[in-house]
Image 1 (cartoon, rainbow, N blue to C red):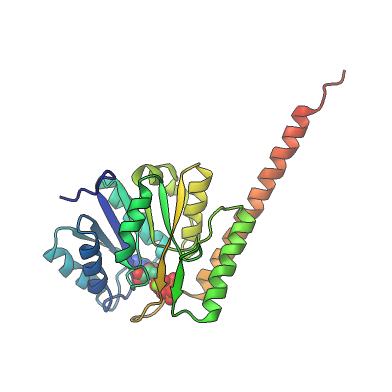
Image 2: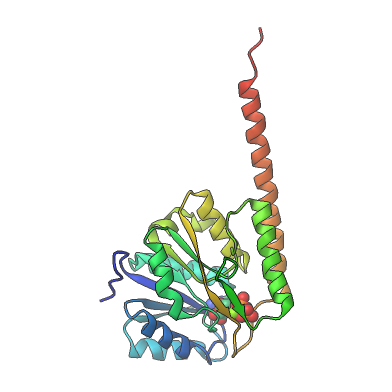
Length: 259
Ligand SMILES: Nc1nc2c(ncn2[C@@H]2O[C@H](COP(=O)(O)OP(=O)(O)OP(=O)(O)O)[C@@H](O)[C@H]2O)c(=O)[nH]1
Ligand SMILES: [Mg+2]
């Protein structure tokens, strides 16, 4: 059985694209770190055979499940598919975790503990106690800069909106109107954090140690970074327009009626 303290049944959704050298290693660590937690691998038809590795893991362990998608459609699409499956299968807590070892399953118990009084828990590199291991200076600057930009533009009260080691209560996911999420790459993470804050959900950040992948290739591309920049700027401008409209309509409402 997969009972997780008072939180209920928990599943970590793990998107994969060409992670054949990492998947078994990370799934094993996850199953050891939190034995009650199930795993849902969402593979986008990886040419390196990750899908077959996932099938073997699932055949050997009833707590491991796999969704096969035909082609690579981006992290956002893979997560949306995984969330839909996890919700349909009745999980109470639905999490996100990379397969490349950057997110350490051994830190998951701390994230789960934080969810006891939150709706969304973000594993965070940029709160006190959070760190990144083995990143070159330019990656640090990119992530810190991107997060500062997002915080400033959207007024998002989160230090690390782009990380992907997270836990949602199912009730939180159900409130986020996932059908309207268009983000594909990194901004998928910022998109969901932004929606959660706007929905008035309790969002908590927990420091994590993020470790740069040792095996396999990053799927980060300039396209993905540009998509984030574009979308976050667009949301920010919309937000400013909305705030301006609010102020103007409040002023109009306060104006004395003259006859
Ligand atoms: N299903 C699916 N998984 C993906 C896709 N793109 C990335 N992933 C997975 O998402 C996770 C994060 O991707 P990474 O390539 O590590 O991207 P990243 O962590 O932002 O980049 P690095 O810092 O270089 O590792 C990994 O488990 C990938 O295999 C995709 O299009 N489809
Ligand atoms: Mg990675």
